[in-house]
Amino acid sequence: METPGHLIVDVARLNPDGESFSGETDPGVMELDAACLYQPHGGIRYRVQVERIGGELLVRGAVSHRFVCPCSRCAEFFEREIGDSQFFANYPVEDSTEFVDLTPEMREAIILALPGYPVCRDDCKGLCAHCGANLNRKRCSCRPVTTSGSWAGLDRLGKV
Image 1 (cartoon, rainbow, N blue to C red):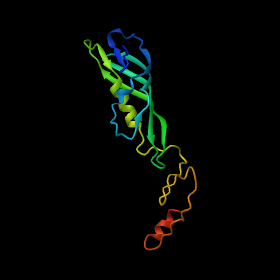
Image 2 (cartoon, rainbow, N blue to C red):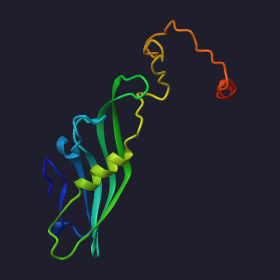
Image 3 (cartoon, rainbow, N blue to C red):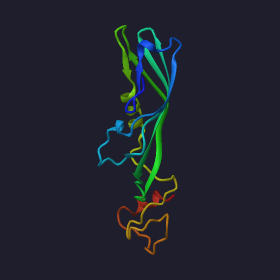
Image 4 (tube, helix red, strand yellow):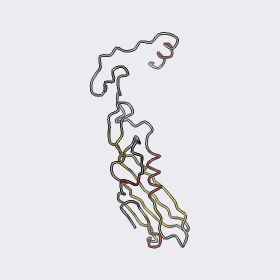
């Protein structure tokens, strides 16, 4: 049984050879705070194979979600698809188990895949530390900082 908000498997009617499920959940299932760095754009996309083996329900496939977030280097907003292409979950089931909701584990897999410091692209130059200019768009006229003193030797090591 698929509902707009969650992916729920009807265990009693599951094909003995397993079944494939694909689609997209409701955007609200991510349950992220409005102040969260990542803002959902659409629902969780899933393509999974579900089968019952003995007393377990095995789920394998791929899950992903599109997010809009600010780059941690240049502060520009960008859209990125985050997911788990090797999603796996198992659920203990008994003869009395009628339905299993797969959504919480899909949500957790996506949240665990979110990068701590998202960047819009690998070669993002970020912002100038002095004037705040976005170095991806223009060069600023700030002079490079020259360091002297007890830390200058260590600073030169990082430029080798």
